[in-house]
Image 1 (tube, rainbow, N blue to C red):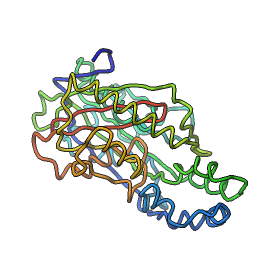
Image 2 (cartoon, rainbow, N blue to C red):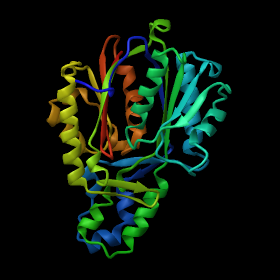
Image 3 (tube, rainbow, N blue to C red):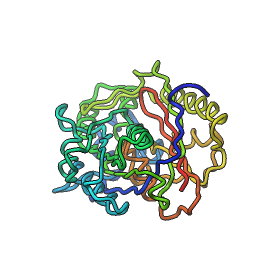
Image 4 (cartoon, one colour):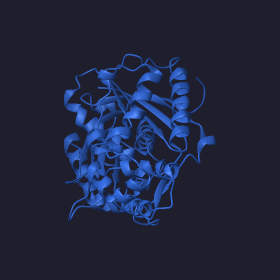
Length: 340
């Protein structure tokens, strides 16, 4: 395999991963109750979100909660788990899709909230649902090259505004079934925050070594999923077809450099039952080794991989092999191997 999007590391480790979830649970039935008029008009049966996507509920921030404050809390937890002081961090990368404003970066508020030193580089990386893996990859390269000793990658998502706007628009009527389903993905989104600390493997033998991975693009599909706070509009069938083709191509190419057919765990981006089933079948994954969180958390965007990994880490054993796998609208795919 050729190209600078094929990466290997020999002295980088994941030291910790943590998540903070909202307190408010929003069931799919509750969302469909708010959509009663639209569903009735289009003659769509109740239970659509559970039946089609496998999403039973998702989390939304409750009173007094916010994605930024939760992300700071996740970051503090990750630092404490890793035994790293804020003063030791040389890089913070925020990977959230959610942002309250275009400028300044979300990273500056999180940098301040975590009490990081003035020497700590901080910026946002936005790449749809791949942002967290991209952030880990960038940080790993800087650690490997000796530019920094420690990095913290953070993410916080808030699905409230996009879901409120989507429900209001769908209830106005005037859409056919295809129009309704083009906005279906917005209704599966959930909120949550996560953080991970990376450092030098030689200094932390207890850490989980980052082996390497691949990133591949199929940007001819950049119009298949376009989102903003107003709504997310998706050609679901074409997106799934294009995404699967990209994953399969990247997977096959990677086999000349990596051996990923018998990993102990596959931590996939959590979209839906349809997406998960398709990925499992396309590359022949052992379903027993693919944990899922979308039934009760929905699609938490780029936070879904670290949230799922954080939930799964208690079941992992030393020397287990873990593959992080994601597909982001655009389209891009990234896979990153960890030696636990």
